[in-house]
Image 1 (cartoon, rainbow, N blue to C red):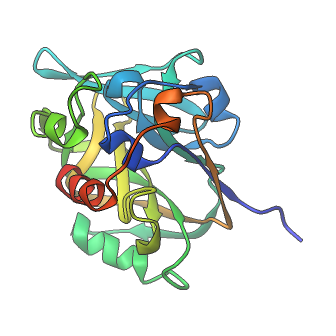
Image 2 (cartoon, one colour; image 1 turned 120 degrees about the vertical axis):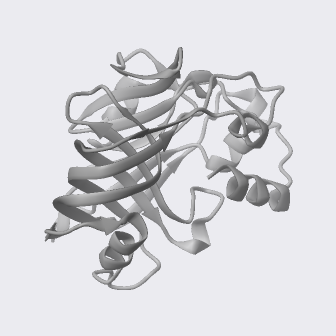
Length: 239
């Protein structure tokens, strides 16, 4: 029997929505659990992209995109990684919008109640991303998100990494696609808003188990009060 593929998720998206931005898990600890994934950094300082076992930060700086590799001692408040193993691989040979490609990807799903890891490597005629700006816990995530910088780039090569989450886990993560992009030359990236792919290779990985961890040493998390309905509304507004 093959070893189970575990999606490791640290904290929940709802905790971010409630303003719990303090990093409590190091990048080094995170990478022990997977080589592909996403999240954010301490104080929600930009977008975290995990690709091929390395962690990168994408953020808006002085009106431009900045992408840097993240050291192992940097901490995260929220992230999800998986040891990505492609169950389905196919080539995209002609131009498609993100919505069209996502429908094609879903046509390969065997059921709708399992997580999937997503890796899309190729050339994009259009890529539209955003980055959450660094903030303090006195501002709700949905409020911060209204001021997040957005950037576009045409004719860019790179990789989209992400997780597809079943509807029943909305709040733990984002139901549906949560995708981050990083360019091949490491100069452009962020949280994917929309894109048009020219050509590429799409990998869809199976996930057998969810390993959900919580910041048990963070007393703000332990005693936080969550309004579930409000949090779900904030996720919809922000994502």
